Length: 402
Ligand SMILES: [Zn+2]
Image 1 (cartoon, rainbow, N blue to C red):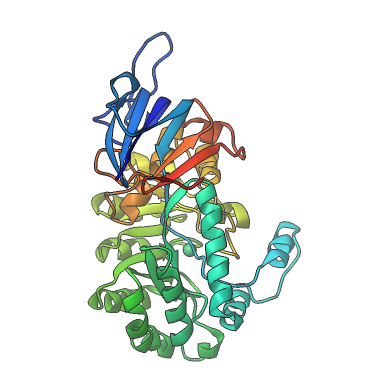
Image 2 (cartoon, rainbow, N blue to C red):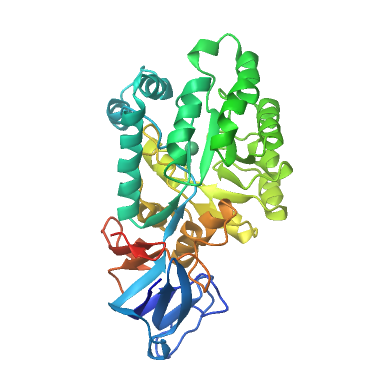
């Protein structure tokens, strides 16, 4: 096992406030200001094998086998994208184009993707998945959750999860994405399938169970039955909640101790209070609002109430076809009331909390050596320079991948 020191880091984001504080105030030296990011200026990071062994001021860095000069750039933890839908085939360009052109579009939406996914071979699905994983990695994402949900038969859901599990540990069973056309007349029969035979086939390949709790998808009672059945099989819940309308999803998430309630776009005060009093993370997915011209979730309201907030891409071919965490950070800062520090935290440590992980999303001794070198003097540039490819290097498990 060899050790490497990365020196000459202008700004290091650790996400451990005990290791450093905010950006220096103008006219002062050293660090100052409140930030959740635990910033260290003129820093170095030591990697030993696949772990972080040491962080601190560059001039105090210990001797190592290898030395890398960051050239006065910024180092942040690799992004943790805790919500994506990457096992699919086909494309919905025409639907997006029609929506953005104000034209009606009557083709099947998600059903289009279900048909294409069912028709694809295993090799085609895996090639598609690896392509988007590589795309995310190039943009700094080193941990990525992904879901089934475009098969909606026992065999197609199980194979989606089997393929996903070859590429990430964070795999979610989403048989309850929509009621498929074959069960349009018998939604209760579909819930029975999702909680019975399909669950038994899928549980061995997944860590999480998810449900789209929304008008037109699954109501509160159905969602509770599905998540409870998953829990009994050892899967932990997370929920697509309150995306399009007010609904029971967020309160159900807190009631069932879901790791995350995702979307949280339409919230009552009672929803916000429930999130603030529980351990469920509110995961905001601004790519979806961007791509559907929908109202933004109010991150400021959640943060001011003390809710833990994560940011994620929701990468999927229908409503948010971006794999870019920097893009989501920029939207969250510009349109959702987050400070740049809060948004960077939410895209790293926040995502880790939404996956109940304490080994990623931070750069502290013992954490996995997943880090991104930004071609910028500070992490604020992620929002300040939207759309600019600032990711210069990506290290995952101590290995430089980009
Ligand atoms: Zn989603």
